[in-house]
Length: 351
Image 1 (tube, rainbow, N blue to C red):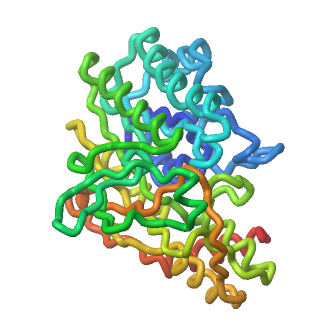
Image 2 (image 1 turned 30 degrees about the horizontal axis):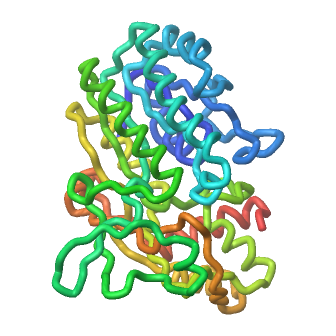
């Protein structure tokens, strides 16, 4: 889907931003990427894979002065806000860094737009399934309940699920946000900040809550994101993939091409919206690990009983209300998506 306007993408040199630029930048009148080129993601010598007509400005999203200059010069009609510190576990260890970048950085974007006197036609925020926390669960009577996050004492005892409860797929606009880690809290804060600003300024806002995005182009060196890339690297070494807890952690893996299609569709809309972006298919981590082991002829995965504080037990979404973001296309199957990711990593000798 073409985005023929002036487009600013914060964090646009990363995994999702690069894929989005490859799909839409050639049809835009101007496409500007504003990115800090974080070493954790890009390595010490970033090698960007963006189209040649994309302008890249290296800068921190918290740098209001530089961001204002970029906004004033470009006067974007569409702003896609991708800039964010990710990583559930890392956010617990570095809460100030994640809060500063995600929350203060979002406020800086708002201030830059105001200072430059720019009200874009469309503002798109990539939020996260992390805003739901553990999400909604059903008890034996069919009553919906929202359990708090799992404390360390619960995990140490090997109590992975909530006894007597069954997880329910999240649904934007229906499932109550209840983040249970620092990252999720900061993403929900981004939603609130931009919503309040957009309403006051008369700007339409499209918020996309992304499930577990994977696929070619995802950073293979970032230790805090991309579980599928990590699994491939271990499998190619001939090691059994370690699977945490009892292997039955549930996730919704959504392929990068499907995410790009959804973001383009959201960006092209005129009305404000809040949508989930996932495959709509729930998969256990153990099943995903077995699929990768089969694709690489690796030993069977090994359930370790290890755990990570802040991880939720089940995260998947009901895509029915958000089906329009697929633009009529069926979601990529996990098998096809993992095959494409494996081929991409092998072609770059990443392992």
